[in-house]
Image 1: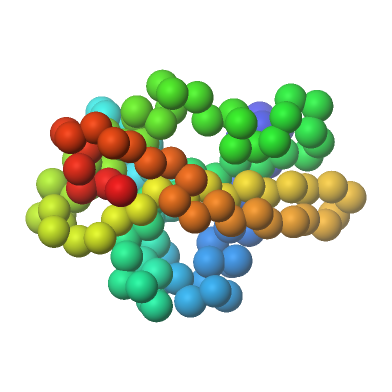
Image 2 (image 1 turned 60 degrees about the vertical axis):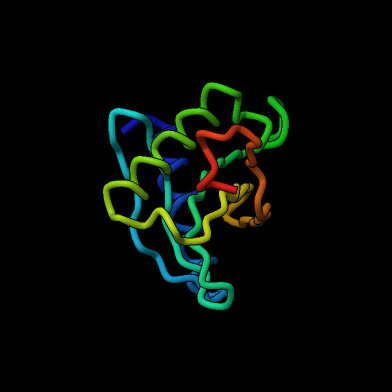
Length: 130
């Protein structure tokens, strides 16, 4: 496994730990379909929302904040994968949001920045994901 992949996996593991600690139920990880990929699918136990989560991990800020690494193409893939997940699991009527979790790792310590509803859309065909 390459360094970036290893760091990404560590970041996702830390994000899941954080989510569980904050009353989220992990439904799935690394959901793949031809439309795209979702790092973590969770349910917020307080709001009952289904959350699609993109995790971005960095060991430094030379290339900017982690969330800045999510371009429009990646957003589109997350939307499409989310729509397919909702369709496939007959969940079109459930409340959904897309969050980003930034994980900063340095010197055996880490920091989590959870950005709720970080990715939104106003397009009609993506109406299920708000």
